[in-house]
Length: 512
Image (cartoon, rainbow, N blue to C red; front, side, top):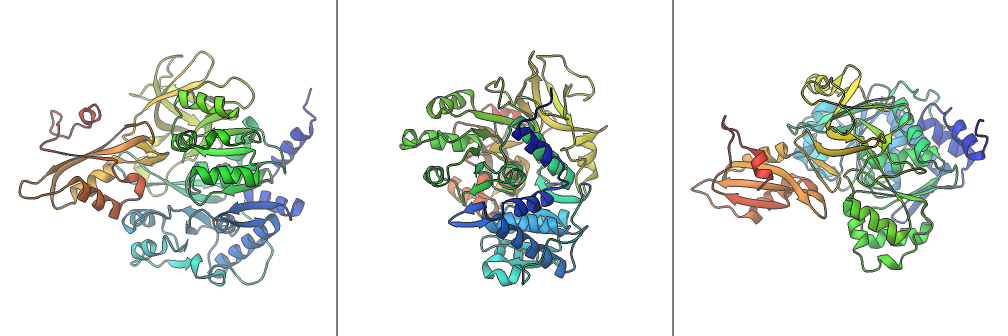
């Protein structure tokens, strides 16, 4: 018998929306006075949200940009950031998401790959973006100079020809074993599919939810939980300008969130260890979410015992999200990323050929396909050929499936560390260390850490005629890397282990 409940009707109606831009238009029409977003003391209603998006889209179009063009966004957590993302996408251009904390050195390859014609920046990112783009023809609009610079005057309507599902919406950056960034393009249809799939497993109530979101919006988890899903269910989202337990506690008191997108283990650890944690009222939360890095089973159980709120863990990548997740209603298994989501094929295949499907209980590489999954990388045919084969995305993650169909990730093929939920590629750090005039050899590896999941440990051999302390080396890294890429440990040594062919043996370094 079909489900005729109001919630089912809400969900069925939302599936008829072509893109998230249309979903925003729907929210503006149905609940214009409802608060759409809050961040750092600033808020906007859906009507104000829609007006800002229309003005941003008009600004982009006034500069001669639109469909087929890429527009960069390097802005910190804010109400304006949400408006920019939707405004750029409403113009038909492809919103290209940059980490606003990056250095000029880190921006340069991203600009080379994406070739944006316009970048919205803020006071934090402006200097580095200017330095990285000085040889390029890129227009920069700095939000900190005032709205007259980045908002078109007046309050126009949305553009008459809004993007359609097959049009490009967004470009996200990820990396690889070499540290070379890769740019993942997503269509409007893929983003809509991601939200519909998520809502199908973790049901929301139209017009009623309040999301409290920690992950940054240049990260796919932050985009889903802080940008796309709240609009899809016509709800309010509360973004924190930075993470601190007391800011979370204040937000819970002030805004009564129903969904807490905490994300990485670092957040859970900091909250659980805070002296005031047990004095907080978490009873209004329907669930919290984990992602970006696996939550230890003991931490998950402690959270649920002390708060009475369930944690829902899932699995996805910059190339698509979600692939699997634990159900809101049903069995949840600690340590598992859950069951495949609707319309998504997930298989575990042998690492050697990628063709043999492994039996239950045996490990192999995860490959996936679905409407939410990208189909390649921008300007990188080699990486595309490696990761995207015969309609499948080969994730590089090693896992097994249990007899109930739940997936457990146990390792990674890629030489990558996940530090506080961020992907860090040691090869990039290797190259930076090797460029130091006092270093003869260097190698960086990811090692387990109770607080951040993993940290980067750097092994360095200093030239015989040079002197270099660990603190000097850390200062060098801080000048050239965003904070989470800076090594957590530095080991100055006289030699590094080698393989029979003379390569640095990172496997040996990881087990030291």
